[in-house]
Length: 196
Image 1: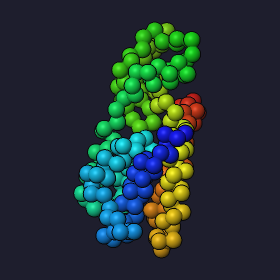
Image 2: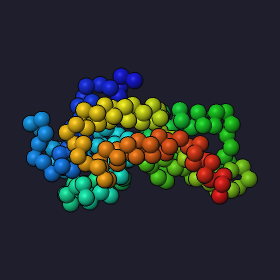
Image 3: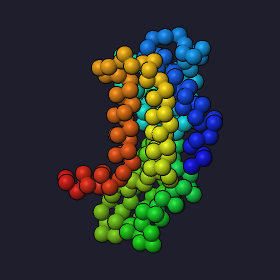
Image 4: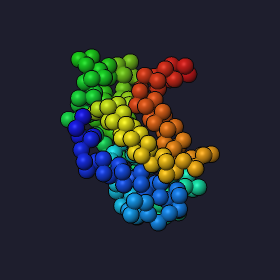
């Protein structure tokens, strides 16, 4: 728990949100702080990890919020998510499958790595080729912690930005929070796959 609430992470979260709010409001600064430049903004997002990477992917579609320089940096973030380290992968694989090994063959190198998890090629015992999605270690907890921190800062910033109504940043951030909680719940994805 303390990992997600350490002062450095909270400060980076504040700087991230301050940058977003200042850019959206087309101001030079807020509380005497200038927004992060596009490169520093991108690095802050990468440092903050999963939730902020997903949020950046959403924000990258908002030309009404950001200048072209910021959008260019935001649009490159999805390509820079590193695969899980081997120890984290082993924990999550064992959590998912326990002692049961349903695969004749499983490729440990992911074919895709994203902010929520990664995808591996595998072959079932009957010879069926499948893609196996493995969530990142502690992803649900990390996402909920990030949403709490974002929520705290939204309440702080709200009086200064309450004039934004239609398609407001606050609405985007709240919608994002709902979306990412659903996304980390792979049982929802499983239910959707079963429907098809």
